[in-house]
Image (tube, rainbow, N blue to C red; front, side, top):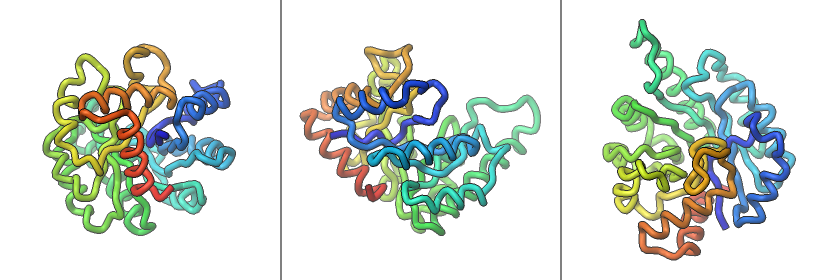
Length: 253
């Protein structure tokens, strides 16, 4: 069985969500985690999780959505028994403004640190988003790693310096592993401790081959599991067992 540790089931593109969930469970996925991204979508994520036994959610705000950041709202949703993490939160410097870049980065860091401190206070794992911001992210996470119960670097970007966090953090591996231009991830995968690997889709984004270009969905974690098994010289069953144990350990589900 597979746990999709990062799937945006609250996305508007899932207007057929019941069939998407059924297809996932029919294809070997037995648990799904919906990360928080836009604070305005948290009610929908909570509703989906509370309507399905094996679906959970996290309370967080993506770095692109920090204009609406409100820690009090996250605290409220974190009280929900189906909320099992804080995030996704982090730093994303891929799209920078034309002016006041330092101010923009400072706002992202402020929201990131606020969510880290909330995770520390509540004893919840942290779901981390990092894009084009490896050094700043590493510096911040290093400051807090001893106080965090754990976390996952979602959609791990294959940065070697982020392996420094492997004593506390897990590494989310998704569809990029199957891409022709995903060679860096393929090369670094064997360097990640086996007890730190978890599967994800980031659906509806980052659809794995052979469905790249179509809407991603949690059932497609099977393609990532197959690719991971091939690279690591393991059986598909071994990959499923390993990553499921890891996800259960991290999220307590």
